[in-house]
Image 1: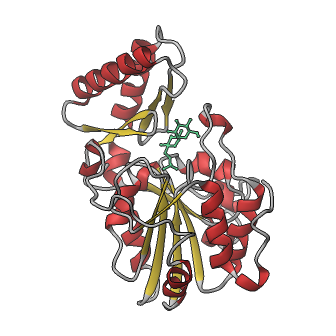
Image 2: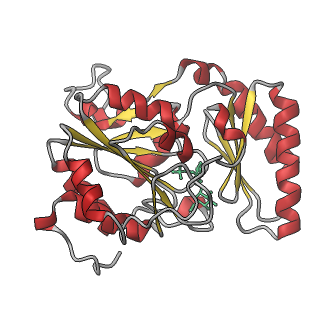
Length: 302
Ligand SMILES: O=P(O)(O)OC[C@H]1O[C@H](O[C@H]2O[C@H](CO)[C@@H](O)[C@H](O)[C@H]2O)[C@H](O)[C@@H](O)[C@@H]1O
């Protein structure tokens, strides 16, 4: 994971404007003025509302419809760029959009997988289902260490109530959202201790939204994944990045002047140029960005 994942974002844009209340038309016009539009959207807290149980996070149907409209446009690419694994994302997002998982360490291009023809292995599984994600080679090599660390944390944290260890193969997440404050504090401390000792400087730590995350200590994050995607699109592509958490700052830093970064929520300093309140207001913005003529009413429920 990128070195920036070791602490809070160091952005300077406090009090930055709300995307939907200021400059909206200008932002949409900027994004639409390039040769192509690449939308890199975080999942939890950006497209999917935050919930206590990470297994229960879902993409609201109204958001899925807006993403489908964007995805259907020939000059638009939609990528979900998340801390979740791509296999997890695949079960939550049915659209054949690009999935970037584990904070940029793996990627699954379902649109191209769908057009590859029959699976040569003879499997009865669909081609898209059988298609394997591309994984950063250094991250792949670190899987045994990550999995062993996750197993150790399971044991060490087992006595603590309302703590959950999510093992995602390339990275791991310790959740304390529903734990009482003293338990959450102890959980954070124990997690840092275990990862630092176990990792032997080959694992890195990051503090996110009611979570501590660990992964391989390599200089690679969401920003690198966004940059790779940029290079695969026509010159003059405009990029929209929306995200709500620590590792999204890395993606914001990959943006250029003609791109647009949007931090969701207003609790934290950010390097994003804009902010917006919630997954609902993200959807409203994407709805307007997608195709004004076909726009769903913003009052449309989830
Ligand atoms: O990059 P993201 O798509 O935002 O993924 C970041 C982490 O999101 C998930 O945890 C967060 O959402 C949960 C469900 O709403 C919530 O319970 C938790 O407190 C949040 O931190 C996910 O479980 C992690 O694996 C992701 O790394």
